[in-house]
Image (tube, rainbow, N blue to C red):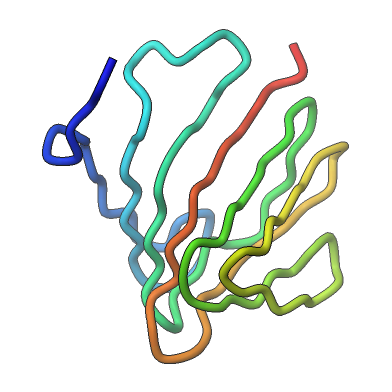
Amino acid sequence: MVIEHSNLKTEIKSRMREGKGEIALTQLGVEPLQKHLRLLSEILIPPGSSIGQHAHVAETEYYIILEGAALVNDNGTPVEVKSGDIVITNGGASHSIEAIGAVPLKMIAVIVTDE
């Protein structure tokens, strides 16, 4: 199966998870997703915008950073990430991410459930 980019659905979310500004979330999979795949999206976060702090229980979220830079609150520890880095959150840990610098943050987000 091939899905052309022009056929993908993009949503604009304001203050996602009590974060700042607006982000663009493009669904990369087709519904329904595979059994343990809860989310497969490309996310674009403008500088200064963010996804607020949230936990992942009985699932793992991966942020694959494609472009830009961000400040991640990794379960209470601030960490700067850049293109090529991967953020992994699971086991009840929490995280947030804020785009920093002059260019938007572009990343792939994947959530895989434990059951």
